[in-house]
Image 1 (cartoon, rainbow, N blue to C red):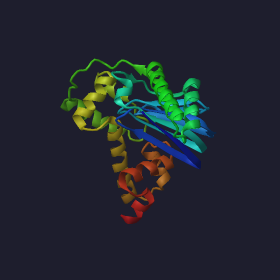
Image 2: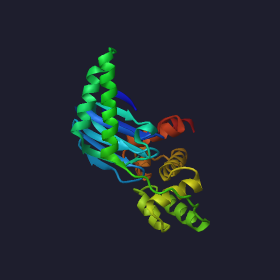
Image 3: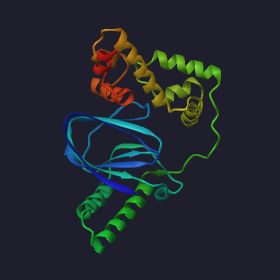
Image 4: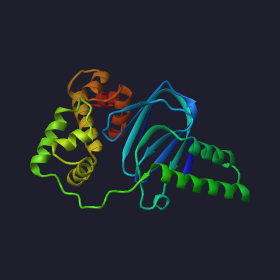
Length: 256
């Protein structure tokens, strides 16, 4: 397990997005924020109020994002190795407080810069305690392995039509799974096998492609383009667009 300590200087709006092969746990240490919303891969955004010890648990391979306003804070970012969890998965969590994990984090931070033998032993012991606590508190047994089936041609057609007609609305995985009569877990695996990307990535790609068309062929303001494509805020749209295209929407329009 690796532990990083992050300081976020004051910003009016900050977007965080994580999608990694290893599970992550973020622990709010201190700071101020006027509002914060967190979502997990196509699930509706959930408002939370961070306090010292608030945790954000992101399972391996899942995408999760957050947007905060008027924020200045410090948090710890824990990245867990496969050996830390064994055969255990983590459940997604946002907004719960965990005073015990916060206490361990603060003790590790207190001795982080020390390299004497006692400090190294203390850091190793505390990290082991963190690993065991995370596994006990947030772990869940993985689903029985099974080979994911691909979506057939009719299911693909229904999904594509629905997604293309719904880019301006909130799209959640349970609704997509229900559309083709599958469980959420089975649908996610079938979607990835069929399209080669997660549902979140597919929807984001389609929204960005639609945005490129609107920016190049209309005079709609960037704010209205973001609303028309279902982004939570114009700043979130700008961040996601730049990550995918390499330039901001304004620069893209100017260059087309």
